[in-house]
Image (cartoon, rainbow, N blue to C red; front, side):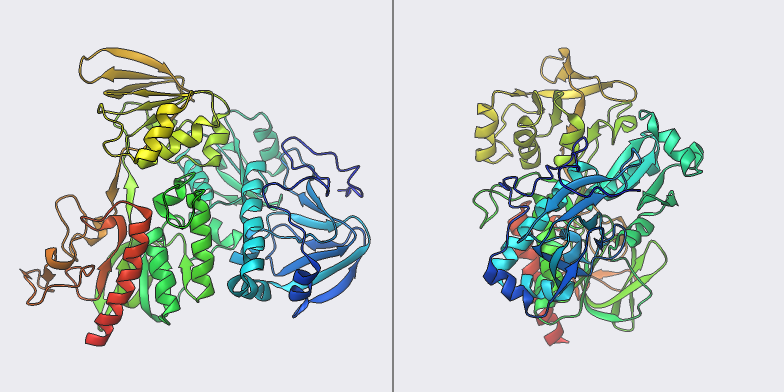
Length: 571
């Protein structure tokens, strides 16, 4: 395929970024480095000439080098456009740098970068850039902010790999959820709705019944890959066959788990974190957290998660995804965590931070709409799929409130449905005030969803007033559900003490369970976060009586590491 050779020829395709290098950069995605910053990067880097047509970064290959453009221009290109062509996403000129979040996290490149003019670049090894991001505050803020925004832009543009499959296929929904939760640039092509889907499948010699498929780098076809297979191909860390005994194994990479990873690794503990889906937990589905300390303008859950993952990596912690823990044992004085793929991870101490998963509405037919118009998260990707259509939100907690405020700025109208009559009963006051003052939000009190209308996509909601029994229909093309969550502890039922709802008991509430199954109260009160089994701690939402806030989860993750040091000293 031919390459465009000038920014004037690089006419933006549908949904692309402006390609003009002089376009204002209000979001901070494309800053220009100062001469002093270039000099800092040049320590450990190398200058070299580049020529028109030379490829600096190839989509689908590891990101190993950081490029600063000294002279000339470089085009950022999406190779996998569904129309079969290449899209120029951006043109960079002198002072700008290439790359996005994958460079810092060791992922594959989701775009190609190609010189469109002769010039000179500064090439810096990725390891050197990671070191600078970890220790140089000014460069860290500038590069990390740019990379976070660029990842968001790539996702919005549908760059990266393609998922082709039916909206009715559970495996299609699984792959889409994995890609969205891990914030991976991709585009979903619906076999039921997109007329190009079958033509694209024929060109790849794939039958519709073989879907879902993932198209990587425009040519490699993965037929119904597992989450682990998809993770490997994009460069995410997954469990391996290592027989090492870790000092600390963290189960779950939500705020509590990531905090335990950061503090454990920074204290010198050999730390690994096991996550079944994606780093960030339920918090990563929040579009904006406005009451988290230190972020007066708020921070998205996904940005908080990305920063925490990079921070954990800075101290040497490994965060593994697609690592579902299904069993727990003790062996040779260590804790053994059995994985769904048959593997095992061993540790001297364990922090359980599995959090909780969303509850689903028990409404007939709602499962068929999940992933196409019924959602359990409200991020930019879900908002993009809603376009400007009215939406419904069910729930009265902070998650529902944050989603309401966020979506009200994106869609034509938001209908917030709560079972009670007091919006402030379980929602922070700052959210209540914003919701009540927003002209595009209607709060339906004492209202419950009884039916969903629509086959492929949602057309409307059948609702009922739980005081009078009066029924009505609300026009909504999408439904967001935030009605609480249940702990992920079924695999622990025979190993430690849980309460009647499955939450983990810790501290004085916990009892020690002997291997023969008999229980006895500990002679000494357990540490506040220690479970009924010594060396096994719990932090965050999975623990009974925990405060369901991001800040408290982070605090408990840090506390757990302190108590683990006490546990090691006692041994």
